Length: 433
Image (cartoon, rainbow, N blue to C red; front, side, top):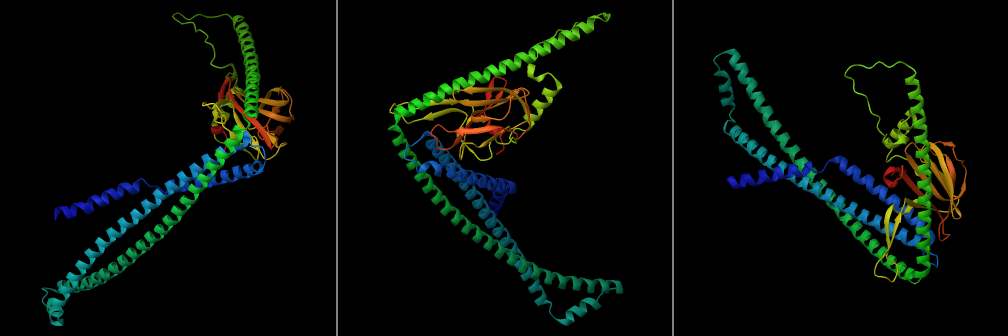
């Protein structure tokens, strides 16, 4: 008997713990994530369709394919999470049905007892005798009130039984609907898994064709590496110049303040300790304007607009591997920023934040604009034209140039970099998702 009571108790406690792991807001977040992934897949697919039909396979096509595969894996992972939520919902419904069924059994037992009691005392004489045997008028009124309450209690029992039966039926229907939803989700999971397999096969075909162009691609990769080195050197030079100018300005202001101080008679307080000046952490974070700009830039992490209205990341920041050569080891490239593919060349490129044009440079036959936002810098490279000048103050969203064609001439492309002084940062976490 103890064992039969213990098992349902454990079952209910376990269910309470399981339900606590499944907050409603997580479901909403999961749905938002699914929508974002689907929108990004749609954008990537649109970009990929423009290069898919070309005879010559390109690295851009391989990058977009890899992006599609990564997003497809995320989509399948999202479906798996959705299945876990549905399983928890079904489990919750089963627990509720179990609880309600036990409650219904208890109500039926109690009602049966009251029916038996009423049957045994069904004589009108018994009720009258119960009332008239009262010792006083007030006692008789109380006994009449008791009989009415007892009658209401029995009616309430019937109502509770009927309501509980309805709730049980509702929970069963909910569980049935959730099982149907699970079946549909499982079908979608199977479909998306097939899509992923097709994408992997397509990637293998592209890689095979790219290997046939190993020499051309090796030259292309070497050219990009060289261009990235030149770009990095140009950005480093601009940052060093900005830091040097800020240092000279800070030192000049310090000397001016020192001269002003020495003209006044100094009063030395006995026991006072002379302050020693320490080197500032950053010369680009000294004046009030830069301090406010830096704080504003940092507070907008994850909210900054994209430099183009319509584009997708084709090459991520940092280490990227290309297993397209006949060698056993893949070709490795360190991207100084992110490469953003656009539908066509000539796309408008905009400043992601207010700042000052710190420098404009030419890297080979392409142009680059670098903006300073306090101690933060953003660089926009592979521009076909520039519409700002050095020293100009730009606002967020202001046009600074237009995107040039990509390496294969299949669309537009810009290289977007983010630095905190000389330290390169991954721009993606800073941009609006």
